[in-house]
Length: 123
Image 1 (tube, rainbow, N blue to C red):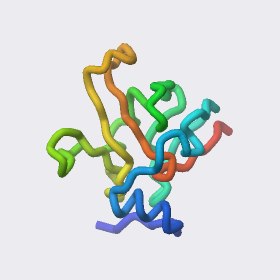
Image 2: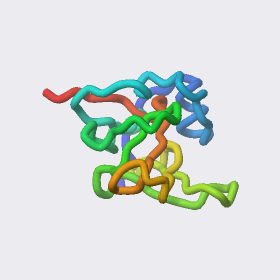
Image 3: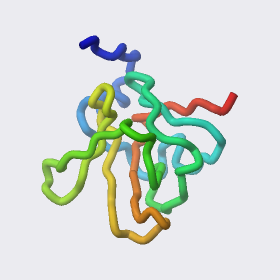
Image 4: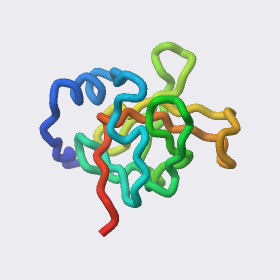
């Protein structure tokens, strides 16, 4: 099986995507950003989220209540309390998913680091 092509990453992007780090809250370029388009993995460019599924969770990071089918892998976080989300294509760290917060009808919040994604506008 062919490995996905990886884009060049800055040290900050590598810290988050490869080192499973977290960018500081309210600092990411997509936290307060609501344009129509698709969010793709910054490392491999695989489509992850649609702008229609983004909402303001007031948490300091971009929040989505759904992913593009098959785009995201969920796995237990090493802390044992959270569920980590990764790009299904390249395994890059995206953030965490939280269930049962009642913030949307889907009752799901993907809390994603802006550094893990790149936005592709419609058109």
